Image (tube, rainbow, N blue to C red; front, top):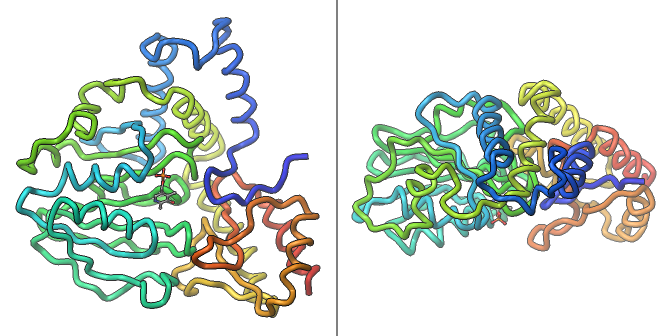
Length: 354
Ligand SMILES: *Cc1c(COP(=O)(O)O)cnc(C)c1O
């Protein structure tokens, strides 16, 4: 029987998508060829790319003027690429530091220019989202991480920028999980492996008019313009991750889109947080008002119960519950494809412990 997969990433994908994908590896579209042995320029694969891009635009309600790219190098390459493409040679940028991933983005950007960390929650091990900061008016862009995969915090309201400043967001672990106004953003990036597909593809959504304004020479592969001009086919794209992403987005659309999944995700999060708050043996690790609906971090109030609890959830067929080493305790990643029933199995294990 399939395990209840709470893995933080790579993570659970819809079972029907895994079935379709494995079929396509053997015989794609009844061509008697595998998806992964045909040209990325073949009619059949170009149709996959076009469909994936169209689904991103439709599901996020993207207005005109944005390009959708599927790149390689993970979200981690975007830490550098965003700065290379958006930070003027004599410019500056603002960053909000909400944990390990933001921190890495800041380190990369600092190699290129004047980076101003305008808010940080590192004083409390990133257990909350900073508030009450002022976004400077003279920065090229503001960068933030919408959901903090490791610490279990999530922006409930997005920061706003002023004047010509751009808004840039790493949405790796919560894109397609809730409705938001994409038109407020100038650039969004996300590694596929949390809510969209397997590792190996990175989604970039970029407003065309913001590019080519830095005054800097950008290496070809790191220049968004290269990939926009060639529709993500400048070099061989990661065909399999793009195909599986397309299937996952089709699955999302078929079931009712982001509006539907947001309701499901809210129900899953409520079920689990209610148990954490009700059960005296557990305690949430993140500030209540900033709790993530994707990664639920919690600890035991009585460490001596750890062995018993670990046995209970292992016996219940649960996978991937161990917390990140920098937080400890437990982390239940309840991404889009994780069914409510799996959360119920976890809640049952928590109740059995009591
Ligand atoms: C996982 C993750 C990353 C890193 O993604 P890679 O594709 O491994 O580079 C970056 N940001 C966030 C928020 C993540 O969850």
